Image: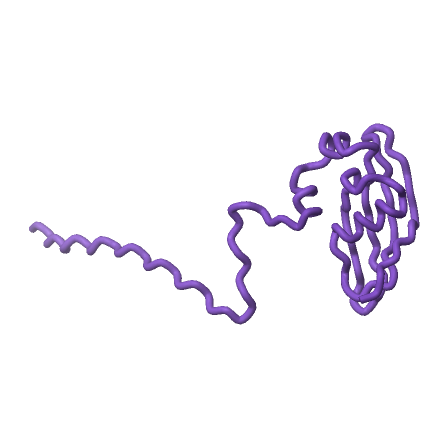
Length: 130
């Protein structure tokens, strides 16, 4: 497998949130890189701690060897935790959400549905009074 290269394509500062908003391109990739791989390469490129980086989006078009990356780089891990939601950090570690149902496998038979409760039998018809 080839080594992925990162190229910085844009950067802006957001002083309100104490962060830099980065756009980059991961070039020479065979498959879409993981968030952890991208964060590691960005940390090397920017000279920051990997815990300060939150990957927002990685997009790779079919057949291309380049992936577009949007990320946020905070001044400290504490600032990142203050402004970002916890699930973003779980994504970076590759953790799944707790309590979620496992995904169905392709080609697997659907699980049987529970039997419907039996309806009460109708009351006997009453004869009309004359």
